[in-house]
Each structure stands twice: as C-alpha cells, then as structure tokens.
Image (cartoon, rainbow over all chains, first blue to last red; front, side):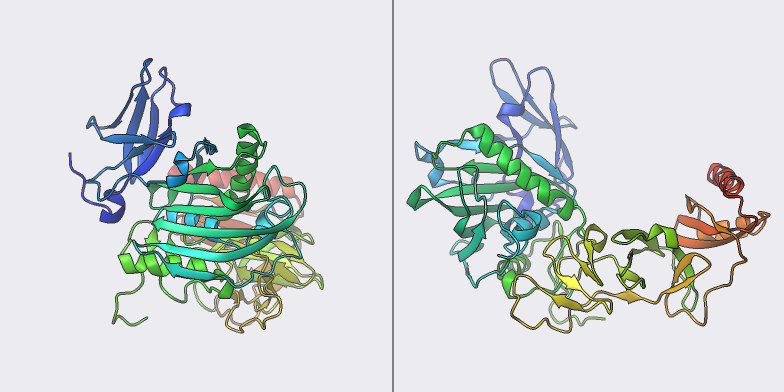
Length: 291
Length: 193
C-alpha cells in the first residue's frame, strides 16, 4: 500500500483536496493528489471520509472550510492563520480552479506584480500605470519568503473600490505551495484584506487552486467577492496553461528575470535551496557544468 | 521528437494563414513556432516562447512591426530582440533578452523555414495552395505516400515523431478534388497504422 515517496517535502505536508460546501452525500468527490487517486465522501450527518481509490483510508483534517490530506507522515500541522480567528473576518472560499500547470508556476503567478496591468487590466492594474516600483524581499525565519513595500495603482482593487488608488501589498510564501497576500483596504488604515492561495498538486504538471478570502467587512457580499476573484483567476488560467516548460525551471538562464521579478527569483532560489523536486526542473547539481 | 534535417527548407504555413494581426501557431520537428506578419508585410517565424517566463507568444498580439507577449506585454522587434519592458519603462532593455528567430522564405504561396536551410526553397509548379492536412503518421511514411498522388505537388512538415502536416499545390487548381484525395490518404494511412 505504500507508494514510493515522490517528494518528501510535499508528501509529508498537508494539501487541500475539497471544500466542504461542494460535497454532496449522493455523489463521491473524486480527485488526485500527488498522482494518488482519492475519494472524498460526506454522509447525511455531515461526516467526511477520505480514502485512496485503492481502498486505503487516509487521515484528513478540516480547516477554513477545506478538507486537508497528508499522504505521508505530517512534518507539521495544517497552515495556521491567526487572522482567521478574528470574528469580523469570515472565511470565504472562492471556488476551486483546475489549472493545467505545475503548482510552483501557479504560486509564482500569484506573486507577480508585472502582469497586473495587462492580464488584469481594468481591475488590478492598468496601462500606463505598469511600472513596478522597487520592493523588498526577505527570508522568513521559519522558511519561505516575504515581499514587502509592494505598491500598484489599481483601478478596481476590490468590488468595494469606487475609484482607482495605490494599493499596498505584502506577499508571504510560507510553504512551497501556499502563498498569501495582505492588501490595503480603502476603509481600514491598520488592517489588511488577506487572500490565501493553496495549490493542490495533482501531478507534476497539473494543479487545483483553492483560493481563500479573509476580507474585512466593507459591505461587499460573499457572492460579489467570489465573483470578483473568479474573474481574476480565470484571467490567469490561460496564461499559466501556456507556459513552457510546464514545470518551473529553477536553474539560471532558462528564463530571464528583471528587477521587478525579485520575488519570483527569491521563490525559485528558496525552492532550490530546500531541494523541492516536484513540479520543478531542479537546477544543475553544484559543480556540474552546463553542456 | 522527430528531428528535422539541417540545411532543408520546410513549408510550415500558407500565405493565407497569416492575415494582418494574426499569430499562427504550428510545430516543426518538435519545436513550437509562432508565425506572424509585420506591418511591412514581412513574415516572421519565431520560437513560440517568451524568454521571460516561457509563455507561448502565439497568445500575444501583433503591434505594428512588433510582437507583444500576453503576460507582461514585453515587446519584441523583428530581429527577435526585446524592445520594451513596461515594468521598467525607463531602463535600457538588456541585449541578451531575445526570442529565437528562424530563417524565412516565401515561395509558391507557402512560408518556409528550417534549420540553417541552404539555397532557395523547392520550386513547386504553379497552381492553387491546398488545405493543409495533419496526419498521424511519421513524416517518412507520408513522404513516400504523397509522391504517388497525381495532380498534386506536396511537401511534408514533420510535427513530432508520430505526425506531420501535408502541404502543397493542386496543379490543376481543383481544390475540392485535392482535398478529397488528401482526406482519403489520411484515412488509409491512419487506419493502416
């Protein structure tokens, strides 16, 4: 029943595989995690069971409305989000989006500032406000990276925005396939809207994105928040599915970053440093010379 | 991946595949290609991959004599060199940022390219350009089969190890007859496989 470990970092971590609100007692939910076919079932009492299609049961947990599975031996708990406990911040699931792209490509796209004025023109950016101003990227103490001081002019930063304004962003990548964004909200000076993106690695070249909103109350309905974010994700999907190679290259020179890509460079370097192999093209071994 | 021979011209598009503003996507010997026509009418055959993040350039947009990538709107001139990066509009674009550009020739209503092709592309007899047809058989098999079709001067574009596109000329200008002949050939070859 044991499967050879694909990538110990991902195999021994937790990944979302379904949202409770989409499960139906009359229909088993079938999905795939790291190449392993899974079935997620809910009974009339609301009890959820998760198992492999080959019959073996699997431990699961439920957080933020998502069902989490660790196929191996958990090296750490499901990601903890302190702000999710704030009473005025409902957790809203946007809906899961299948993307035929490697998980790390999806994370890198979420971190990317330079595409906002084009792929999300009219919403998260606009020509000619396309300049990416300098920002800082630093390592996080427990692994991962943080990008601070990001600023973008946004014509429609959220459904509640009535005019364009300069939006402050902070991005955090705490695990290889978890990224979050702290974004200034026009109605609050000292608190941020938070958007998490958890990526379920289906295979090395396919993913399911599970975005989670932890937004401050500003009069926007959950339906409007969901609809807005679904538009944004659908704008990214065709870009992601047309990136070649499908897996994220970690070596230098295969793709050519510029200064605005500082967070992408730091993300790739961090994945290379921890030795992630799934969904990436690892850099050449140290000492090996390029052919 | 089926190789292509160095020194040889391959037809990879027809003139009518390239209306202004369109980027035509095709493959040659496993290479993904973006084919487009600049404002001055010249045809460009490029690697279908932005050097920045690997997005297919065929998703992009023709802007005058330049091609613009859909992801970050980097612009590339006809030499393949990047000419403009909107994220840093005031900085000089490094000369190392360029798209791979393939040799091009236009002849007989077709667009030709190849790896270091020698001389001029093959001269096809006059006639009408037939509808290109992809067939799931290796290029070598197709080359032998099409030589026997009457009234057709055909050429093979290898896509990958198992498939190729047949292109060429109907010498009597009868495109309906030519198309029926090619469809019949496809049925015969793919069923025999």
